[in-house]
Image 1 (cartoon, rainbow, N blue to C red):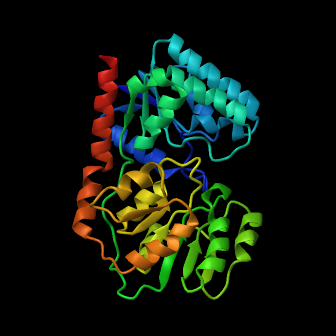
Image 2 (cartoon, helix red, strand yellow):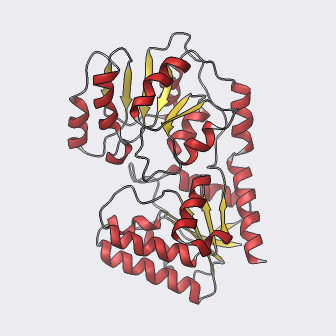
Length: 337
């Protein structure tokens, strides 16, 4: 089988390459599948090699195209590409990662692309059971060729946990406006004065960093920098919880959630998508909130709870990249029967 994967961005572009895509491509190749397109600074251009002969086109986050430079023109190109794929009788796969794009600009253009993908994909994959509800509400005819597959995981790689964690709540990863960090820090500064909160991550703008800085103090610390995975592991080992305060109206699944679990973290997140799925998973320690008002009670009741590393390991191994890709290819082949 020959496939094209979107987006493919050069890995050496600082901050631009999503590790999910590289892991996805590597897992495809591990199954003997040939990935035909190469990374490009503009990922849409990677779809246009003249002599490309692919069986399947696999799209991730294409609905975000309007945010790129010359967004309207690229939106037209994206819609034309979807039409070209269908007219050439190739198969189209779309991964629904979010209920809606996190960035609210160009709402109409994004809706055009999302509607085209939902209507014309041969297979739609979502990493949260709630994603199937989103598809049903927006395009009922697409439900029959939509599937839920857990977000792929990586093996347990926890550092020795500190018996006396210095951090109560850790927020880590790239910090963007939709992730709800300023809103939570405002709440924590007013309602959780005895809880130590640590934020480590590269802010998407200096304006956002300065907004966070106004909450820094004796129990809230902020570091505006990128972490290595080794640093993430050490920070999680010295923290009672990882908090992911994302905006519930857009999120379905989260790479930070899955990476945190791979480090043996107890995780708190919004009562949506994968967070809601995993809060019901007895092998994991995932807690959800309807509003920030729920978080102090979660911290108080579960702060001393110990996780079971063996049940974490079992879950992570069951849903790792090789198992995910096996299930994905099986579902893709069933659609072609």
